[in-house]
Image 1 (cartoon, rainbow, N blue to C red):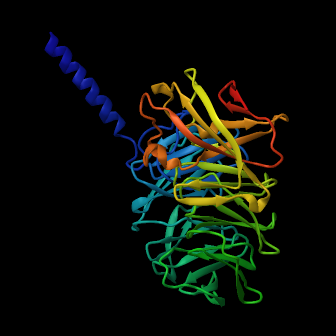
Image 2 (image 1 turned 180 degrees about the vertical axis):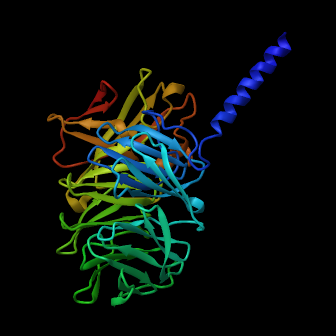
Image 3 (image 1 turned 180 degrees about the horizontal axis):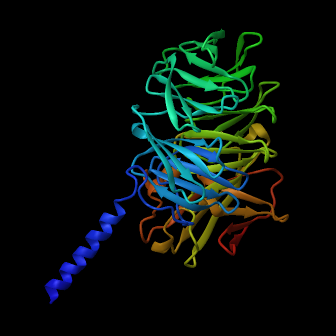
Length: 458
């Protein structure tokens, strides 16, 4: 009798496993609403759907649908292949396109994240697809080819346009134009004929550096190009490129621009984001909060906000009115299940802070730092996750300033950020960094759960 029960149990488990394998090979699993889902590896692309929802994909093979107001995940799907890029559906607002490794393209529904269509191509990898609104198609780099992806026909075609591994390309949204950044030259092409229209040589270009090339359209007449720590603004009408003042300490890895806001943006391996004035081409502000490379920048004109995605697994939202961080998505949030003990040893103002061996100065935009040296004890195993996204100081006017992180955060261990776990019995001890506007006031340190928990006044 006991052997029969064991056999039945084995068959039940086997049948259940076989049923789970029947899902599409590149989109296994179901989309599940789960508020504690976060990326455990770098975020490679983001796609705002509206002012309240955002899609993200990461190197952990997760695609997550976020509710940005609450900074919580609404749904997620784990894929069997690593996603590389997101693209908005041209004719169906209730779906989006997802590009995976090995040349697979998926169409997923919103908000279910169910697979509606799957296309297998002959390519190995895609770069980020670029939308051409006049043609209602996407152009993307696939291996050494420029390909046209038509979402209405669900087809991919190779275009008569040769690329090499170091080329960077961009497509204008309102005109059939393509720009290619190769060697020391940026060249403009007509997308309908691939005929060259104009070319500009970039001054003070260091070709010995192996950093990636980047280029993007600001509008139909201007482009922004980057290589290593250098940034150029290209004027196609005058056929000239102006190099901007060098402000990054490491190679630039992401670009974005907003013609309506008259600003453009650069993100870097130095973990900072620079905001530039389009008219004067002068630095307007510097934004902080990430712990690793900036992978993606997206501007939302309607809300005047900037969204950044990083290799640290987080997504930050900045208010471009005052250049402050207002939301952090996927940043190790936890519910307070135990009476944590907070001890503040010192509070002092400063002009700069360190992350590892890098030092950042915020005085260039009239800001100051408030450094709070503190230790948090009595962390239960259920709460053993770093929590800076919900760590705030609140002043007398109830204005909130979020913690941007720990100075010398690597002291917590090189893998702590990705694993999100703190060893049982250990405490968090260090200097918490807050970027504020003078004058200094009295503050309340608050950990925001539902409802908020006030930890200590200082």
